[in-house]
Structures are given as C-alpha cells and as structure tokens.
Length: 463
Image (tube, rainbow, N blue to C red; front, side):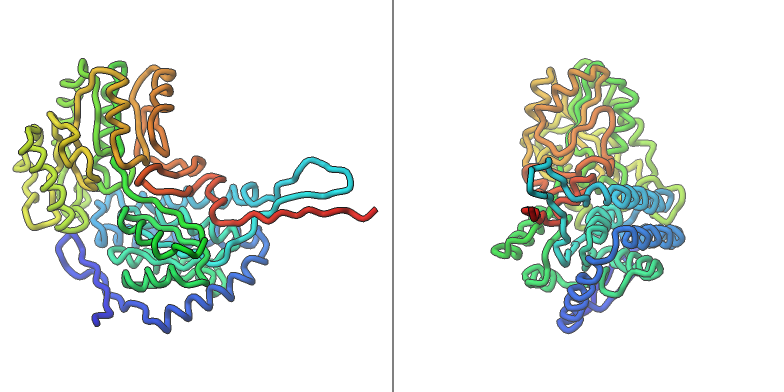
C-alpha cells in the first residue's frame, strides 16, 4: 500500500509537498499523548492558556511571508492575496482568546436560602479537527483556539492539499511553549481518519468539508454520543433590490463570487436582481469580471488563480455547458483569458443569465468562478428562490431600505444574513448553517458551547 501523500500544485502540476502518512503506532501514540497532556492542560490557568495562544499568534505572524508562498503553491491563492489569510486568522483567533474568560465563566444562579448553585463549563477531552484546503487557516482556527482555550487537547488532520498548514501551526505552538501533546497533527488517509473518529479517546470532532464527508463523520461517530460540528456546503444567494446602491452591489457580489477563484463555502453562487435594474447590473458585472487577470498564482499581477485541481475545473465547465444547453447566455468570452484551457485547473470566469433552477449551476455547489444571475419581479419571488436550496449557510440582500431588508432576512433559511455585504465571517457572530450546510456553531461566545460540557453544582450549605 502506498503510504505517501502528495500535494500537486495547481500552478504547474508539480509535486509541491510529499509526506509519509501516519502509521497505526504513530496514531496510537498521538492519541495517548493527547489524553495525558489534556489532563494537565485542563488544570492550567486560563491566563496561562491565553499567554501561550497569544505567543503562538506572534510566532505565526513572523512567518507570514513563507506561509503566503506555501498557500500560493498548495492551493492556488494569488500571491497578492495570500498573506491576507494570515492577518484574518490572527484577528479571528485573538477575538476567541479575548472572549474566553466570559464564555467559560461559571453561571451564577439567583440566591436561594441555604443553598449555593452554579454551573461550570468543563473541557471535553480530546478534540479532533479535520480541516479543508480552501481557507486552510481560517477554517481550522475556528475550532483549534476555543478548544485549547477551554482546556482540551487538539489533534489536527489537515487536507492532503494543504499539509504544511498543520506543520506551520505546530511550529508556532512549539515556539510559544505549548506543552507537548496539547496540540498535535497527523497526516492521515481517509480510512484512518474515519477510524480515529471511532476511537473512545476522541471526545469531539470538528469537520469542515463536503456533505458526503460530513455524512462519513456522523456515521463514524454514531453511537458514541460525542459532539460533532459540521460546516459543509453552500449555494449562497444574493438579492439586489431595485433600491440598492447598484455599484456597491456589483462590486460586492462579484468579489464575493470570484475571490479565491470562487472556492469559498460562503461565496456568492447565485444572484437575483430586480427586473428594473437587471440589465444595468449585468452590464457592470460583466465589465468587472472582464477586468480580472487569470494567471499563475505566483505572479503578483494575477487576480484570479487556478482552481485547486483539474477535476474541479471540469466540474464547473460541465455546469456551464449544462446551463448553456438549457438556454442560458454566457456573458464572458473565455478567449479573453488566454490561460483558460481544457484539461488544466486554469478556468476562465463566467457570468450566466437566462438561468433557472432546472440548471445545475443554480442548485449544485459550484465552488469555482461562475455565477448565475436571475431576474426577479418581487421580494416574494426572491425569497422563494433564495430558499429553494438544499443549503443554508449565508444569504445577502442589497437595499437602502433596512426595514424591508430585515423583513426579508427574517424569512430566509440561512445561518447568517447580510445586508449590503457578503462572504465575511465576523468572529463576534455565531458561524453556523442550516439544512445541508451542516450543524453546530463556531466563533462568538456561543462557539465555546460545543467544546465544553456543563457541570452543575448544587450545594446545601451547613447550618
């Protein structure tokens, strides 16, 4: 059996990273070490946990240039944007560190004569974090920092596309003085990942990935009565009302659809536009998309890099061809993007109109640089179409009428509702989804809830 894991760079198809997969002895050792370390770590003061996590962020930031280069080569993020993930991760992690004291504080109950009552939040034990490649630090840190701040140990399994992310985090934690065993990573096969979830020493699983992957996690954890957090797919909609600031809507929607080559779980994948401004929106959106430069992600002038692999590009091409065959109109001439080529991860962006929900591009998660734009005649039609999806991660409305927009937002089946912005995670807000976008919650004070268990204290005081 091949025990090597290879990371193929989308830039040129070369092998960028090669790593040995962990064997059973290494896996068992990591789990045993995590269990031992967690027992002591849970007794470590919150201030000490905080100081180590803050020091980790400082060590991580010092390596920002190398991290950016690795992101560029592993998953195709244009180099001019790659360092932004470092800054974003630090902002998100620092917020979760800052709210830990409030989130983990005992809940004091009203006085009751003769009794003292309170509820404490206790660590679960060992958290197993399975992270994806598309935002490899931002997604992973959502669970890692609150798990560790709450007194848990963490074992991280990162995507085979971005294994160096796990190694960079481990290096930063080591520099910060993290006790051995509190944070570890393993390069694992799919079968070993599934088997690890089944182990009794694993007390929580945080998974970000596909719906099929989430189903595997739930099945593997079935019958063990442990917590499972699942951030899965998205087909996030935007609705541009007739009273919207159209230039803001165009700029924001197109960036939300095409940043990171469209490879974002909360990226905009379908746009509904009021009929009286539809033509103007499409004209301006087309001009903006045509200004993108498709190129190698290590080229500082590139604004649209390759998608992660050729298979992903082929999937999007198939969606576009299906839509056109059913009557959709393509507004972008792929010949304007010379690097666009069948059989490669280099894929020209595309805007489609005359689309409807019989087309795959409007219902399946694309995870690539394509978006369908559909004309609507009313708020009611927009709401029905936005809710017509198996997913529900985020949804956005562009409008200058806040009350009307909030009324729409209340009716949308979504984890996060945006007004006049999109594709952003505010760490002060709960990050969650409905339907096939998953279950559970990360970020905000609420993000600590799934990584701790409540313990009640009911004390009858001596006379």
